[in-house]
Length: 221
Image (cartoon, rainbow, N blue to C red; front, side, top):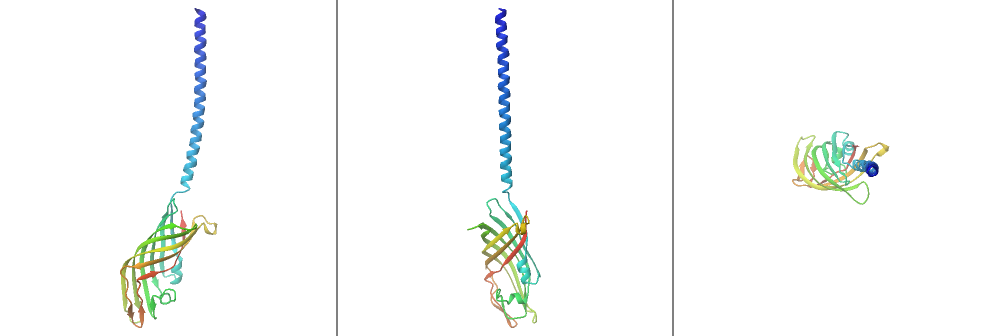
């Protein structure tokens, strides 16, 4: 009888030790699996974080130069994970006589006319062909005013616009993290345009189709 009890006791201890070793091994495997899973999740999170949305803001240096820095214009927006952009440009310009009558703008035929422009425009940019090149549909709203500096006659008009733009952007320029520039060429159709108008000895041309060149310089973060 006592030998049977001894045998049962030995079998019991052996079973306990075996189960303990199994539990320890299972715990170690589980710990390693959790550690690997944690590292994998952390790596995935880092990867996701590296592709998060980015915000940006910039000043329009192009129109500022054309108009002797008598302007305040720029853009703000957000870049998404798929490299699409949603941005808003804003413009408040005091247009010089030289700029309005230049061969590039041709908004005024004649002399002694200055102008103002205020407006904003929304763009949704899609990347095309190669990195940095975008096309975008747009909607906007603009106020225009032209004034003859001698006769003081004025013409004013406000209108919504629809159109599009092609632009090129480059980031981390001069090896500065987040510093970028964008060259943008918008073309817009004015829904309620200024009709061709005479101011003194100058002619204000219709702005049914309007365009300009923007050169934004700013930061994304």
